[in-house]
Length: 474
Image (cartoon, rainbow, N blue to C red; front, side):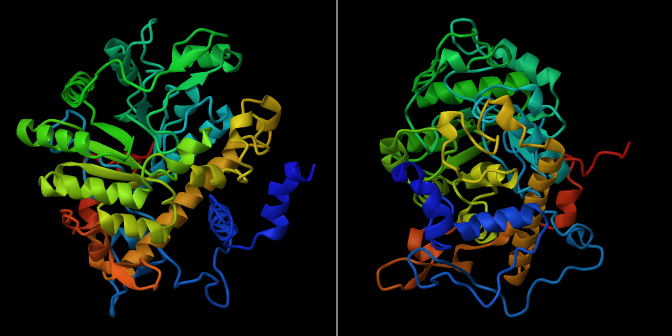
């Protein structure tokens, strides 16, 4: 009995504010307060050990960046669009500039409840962010008006033939019927279980899920480790180009990072052919919202900072970084961590568990049991009664707005207008047992490529900007 209730006892009665994982009480409290528009300050100074390994320091400027009266951030303190345009380099028919640098990461309907997906989609619309569908297909709950990135993995759910192979025809029809789909993402692997497939038990496949995913009711569905649409890097690039030509949308890939040989092959193909992904989402090994074997979750693939720095360095050495939009994913949903990510070369960040917490997740860590007490990660109708999408969508939007506002303030304190202007030397990190602090450039041994940036006004006037900023009021 004690073993069964031990996690709850530790979480609420025993562990201190900074002790828990994946997210400690201070981190969760900041998200909850930000989402509710409550006081998210702390008093009497930090209780964090600022000499601890991997503590982040942001070097502030002597004189901060000053915003003028007509500046976009004077009118909207949370306005930070992506500084790069997805698909611009490859001249896609429908390029896309994400209107928010923080967005909802890939989480499927099926893994999350209908009310959770509805809350997230309505929330990203209010926050002018985008909503990644996850690999479970496009559901009615993704269709409340927020920008959507359509994501699929090896199961090709929503765009599959009866034999489980990929259907270009179905993808084209899906994109044409749903103009709010702004980009397509192909999942190669994910941080929680890279290189491992999965089984969706027939007992979990309702008629609704079967229709959305294109599978049969009550029959187990296999997601294999490998894609059937391509078997090597050259074929993958051809597949990306075929999707981009057929849909007109920017196309990217998502992966956790380990070995680099095939990534170097991709970089060489991109260099010689001028083809390839418009964006790359780098998932950290610390990521994961659903279920994974501990052996995979704990040990397979690199943490975000190591994986991203290895990959970015490789593409930078080939002079390819300016054509790619880099998206970071892996516990980056906090302003200081995001500042570090931007200094390392990220252009946007995706958040999953942080978004879940903003709509009510309490880190019960039983996502894999279908018994989520907050109704976020369960298909139980009774448990979902705990979610009011009207309220929870406001909280997701408020978390995003608070996050962007605080990141903007940190950016201004460092003397910059946009986080894309952060350089490696602007961030220091404790790196060894002697608690010596080193700049990111010396820690990870590269310098980020400067991102072309003129002003926030130019970003706001961009014809490819997502969200509702440039749409006429009804």
